[in-house]
Length: 302
Length: 302
Image (cartoon, each protein chain N blue to C red):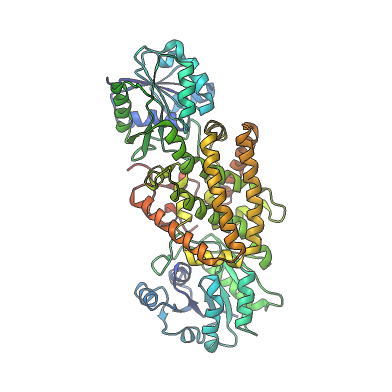
């Protein structure tokens, strides 16, 4: 099976970047797209995120070999119902959501009998909307595919080949395990960042202006993550509740231990942790998962 | 009073960057330096971090108008005692430490009668040591000076002028208030980052290799901060215990509220917070405190 036509439902950061990547890489794949918001459809057409922006979801998916739902995970069921009448019988239905068990369930309920293969490209920025996408977003990044039991191997291979053609490295994983791994590497970091930014902006004894002025001490890094799309992230936490609460419990245990070490002036406990974590950063860089330049390569000097 | 000779004690990221900035800006200021570690002194001389690397702290500070202690806050007392025999009577003693009440106390004890004006340039990277410094580290960044009561205004003015000449924007602040503000904007963000990186590397059900592979989901940002110098940060937490524990208490209260919102599927509470925090990011960028490019301007595309 070869994918010759892909339909992108939802034309924000992820959907737009898929369309632009197909174009930039001159893949022999036609792209159509749709978004629930007419203003987003208009802007997507202006930017040429896909070759054809359609007026309805049904039109967008007609004759598509692959349909990718690029909407918040809480909107997957509705999006699936919107495309249902137009789907070709052989079409693969996939997505880009950050939690996978809930999406698999929602899609299976909305599209009984369809070939559903959920996926999650681990890539993004803090921006969102039809102006945020760019063609190199997926290059060199992992895309985790979570095939359901009994998934057709030729369709799985076609989806893998599609992501590989966009420059991604593909990994197959069980949906439940995906949700646990991403709770640690993505969901808890976002929850912590949102929370500390909220805490800092609510203080009475330190003004918001001070928080912003002196944010270069570390806080500003958290503000980037805490600027991520609110609807997308609300849905992630609601849809991956079990794994998030489990991992959050472990984090707060460890934080309580650090609190106790500070209170009792246990410098060795602090030093031991701070030394161990340095080694993790080295591995992140060695494995090509981050920019090796200091401070992410931020510009220094005004 | 004009500063014509500055002595830098401790030739790591901060000390080295001060020396390089003086040179790069062609200021009419002679620089001398010393580090406790002979290997650091040798490397500092090779890189030309200061004009003269001295064999002893006493030699380094001889005839200096300004001495800047660039050592971990827990080592300030020892450094002050090491320079005491060589200090000129008119010399200003300052530092770059991240907590200010404890430093003020340690320096006052070690150097009774000296002119001590603590300072904190809010600038840095995750790197440390004599190879980490660069001339533009302070450009456009805030330097907070915490003058003690009864501080000589001409000496305060000279120190302010020095930091302004390095490209910094100077702000005066009470030491206790500094420690509270920086607990929020710097110390708690570091503690949280160190802790989550530790948590993630200790799991049994998610391998360390998975954590690193999928770190682009948000976690990798935290690994950068958690790669910061372990000795420096141990000392920060031990020396700013009160403010850190106070702010940590507020953060954990807010995190518990988020945990409850997730458990009870209160999507509105999540959405409200996630929307508020976006506005903070906008202000951080508008006020020139971070790179406005998405993802800190990280390179995308392998």
